[in-house]
Image 1 (spheres, rainbow, N blue to C red):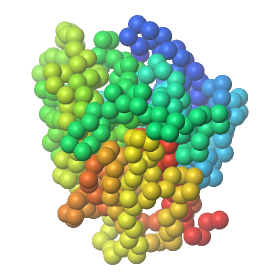
Image 2 (cartoon, rainbow, N blue to C red):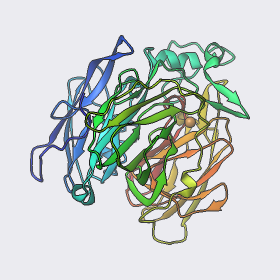
Image 3 (cartoon, helix red, strand yellow):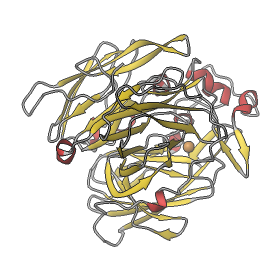
Length: 463
Ligand SMILES: [Cu+2]
C-alpha cells in the first residue's frame, strides 16, 4: 500500500467528495481479520484537503451496520460533528449523509463514534493542508497508529466487566458481583499506584502494517519530510522514537507550536504530532511507536533510494515508561489565546475503577451526566483532576483549548483538542466558547468512554 496522503482536486463549487465506510479483509501477522475501513474517492484511506478547500463530503455507509463518523479535530456546526448523542443523525447501512463546513487546517482524523466500531479500525486520516504546507518543500508522510485485536471488542468490554451503552447495562448481560474483571486482569500493568494498558492486543499497526512487514516510504537523500503522526489506537498511548533522525515538532493536534527539537516523546490516544525531519545521509530510518509500559512497538521506515531495509524486532529491549507530561510542559502555542480573565472556572474530577470496570466524571457516568453549561463568548477555564489509577486522554469536541496549567504550574502551552491527564495529575485548559451547540467531553480510551466516562459541554442558548 502506498503512503496515505493524497490531494483530490476539487475546489469551491465542486461536487462533494465521497467517503465510503465499508468492510475489508486485513492480514495481520499471517492471519486474516475482517475489519472496517473509511476510503476516499480514490480508494485510499481517509481524505486530504487542499488549503482553503471546504469539507464538502458525502459519506456512504456500506459497513453492514448503523454508524456515525466523527471528524476529530474539526470545528463544524455541532449537528455535523458526527455524534448521535449531541444532535447528529445515525446513518443506517446503505444510507448516505452530506456534510459541508469550513475545514480547519492541520493533521486530524476521522473515526466511528458509535459503539465499539473504532476498535475494528473504523478510522482514517483527515489531513487539511495549510497555505504554508503547500509552499513548503517537504514530503508529507502520514502515519496512523492502531492497537489491533482479533477478538470481538464487545467480548473484551464484557470480560473487563464493563457495561456498554455509556454506562447503561447491556440487555441480557449479567454483571457478576465483583464486576467480572478478574478473568482478564493479567493484562493491566500495575505498580506505583497506577494501572497501565487495560486491554491486551494481538498487534500494533502503523498504516495497517506491523514491523514484520512495515511500510517503507522512499525519501530523498537531503530531503525534508513532514511526518504527520496520528494515534488512532483505542486504548494505547505510545512513545514515538525517531531513532537517528533529529525531529522538529511543529504542530500538535493540528495546531502550530513553537518549533521544538524532539527525538522521543509520548503521543496519547487521539493526539497528533507533526514533525519535520531532515534526511541528511543515505540509509533506512525507522520511526517507531512503542506502547507505554510495554516492549511492543510498531512503526514505518523512511529509506533513501537503494538503502537496504533491515528487519526491526516488534519488541524493544526494555519496556517504555508511562506516558507523561514531559513534552506537554515544554510546548508553547505558536498562536496562543488572547490574554483574558476567565469568565467561568470549573473543576472536573476524573474518577472510576478497574473493579468494577466503571469510569466516570465527577463520579457520574454518561447515563446521569451533568452538562457543563457555558454562554457564548465566555472564556472558560477547565481543570481536570485525576483521582483514579489510570491516565485519561481528555477530548473536547468542537473546540481547541490551550493548556494553561500542569500540576499547579502556569504555562502558555499548546493549543490542542486532546490532553493527557496522568494519574495524580491536574491539567487546566482554557478555551473561548465560540461554537454554540452541544459537544461531547470524554476520555478517548474507548473502553473508558463506553463504560461511562463522558459528559457534555452545552451552550445555554442552544435547546
Ligand atoms: Cu480514561
